[in-house]
Length: 309
Image (cartoon, rainbow, N blue to C red; front, side):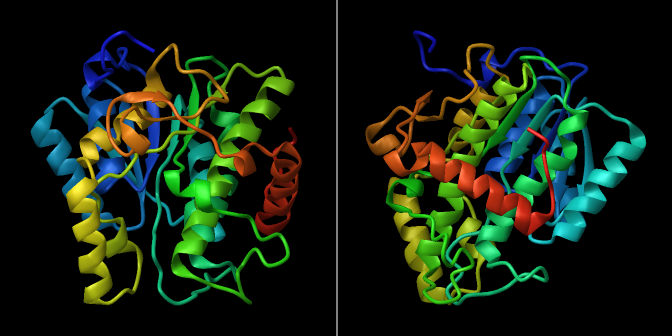
C-alpha cells in the first residue's frame, strides 16, 4: 500500500478504457462512476431506472463536463435482463477494462422471489453478477490492468451459506439473506481469481468492501417500514462514512496497479468501518476453497451460465 492514504487523485489515467459499473445511479456506484469518468474512462451506468440514470449522468457531466458516460439497462435480479445486456454488449464488439459489480439491496423484511424463483437479495447482489461476469468475460481485455471488482461487505464475517436451502425458503431473515449474498460475492471474487490464474489469464478479480458507508441501499432496497428505515439511517449516520469515501476501496481495486488479484480491500480504520483503502480481513468461511467450488457449481446450475474455467 502507498505510504500516504490513497485517494482518487492517485487513480492512473483511464483514457481509452471502458468501465461498466452496476448500480451506478446513486451511492457507491455513482461515486465510483464519477471518479472513473474524471480519470478519463468511458463509464457505462448499468442500472434498472433510466430516469435515475439520466439524473446521475447529468450530475457527473456537471461535475466534470468532458465526462463520457452512457446508460445501459440492467436488472441483476432478472437473469433475462442480464442475458439481454450481455447480448447487446457483444453485438457492438466493445472491450471492457473494468467490471465493477456494485448493484445491491439490503434488509428486505419479508422473503421475496424474483421471476427466476431466487430469493431477491441473493439474486440482486450475487447471482445476477455471477451470470453477468460469466457472459461478459470474453469481452474483458486480456491485461493485468483489467479488473473485475465484486463488492462484498464486512457483513460476510457473520454469514454462512445454506447449501441445503440457498433460497432461504425454510428459514428467512432480512439480515441473514443479505449476509449470505455478500459472503457469496466475496467467495466468488476469490474463486474467480484462482480460476483466472489457473487458466493463464492476466485479468485480475479483486473483491472490495466500502466499510460502513452512508448510502440509500436500505431505502431503495427493501419494503421496510419507516421505523426500520429510520433506525438504519440513524446507525449509518452516526458511524458511517460518505459514499465517496466508501467508494475508495472499490476504486483502488479497480485501478491501482499494485492492487493484487485474489486480495480483498476495505477501509483501514477500526473494524474496517471507515478510512482509506488497505487489505481487508477475510473470515475463515469465505476462505473455504471447497465451499467456494461448491458455490460455483451451484451458481452455474442456477443461472445457466458456465465460465469454462
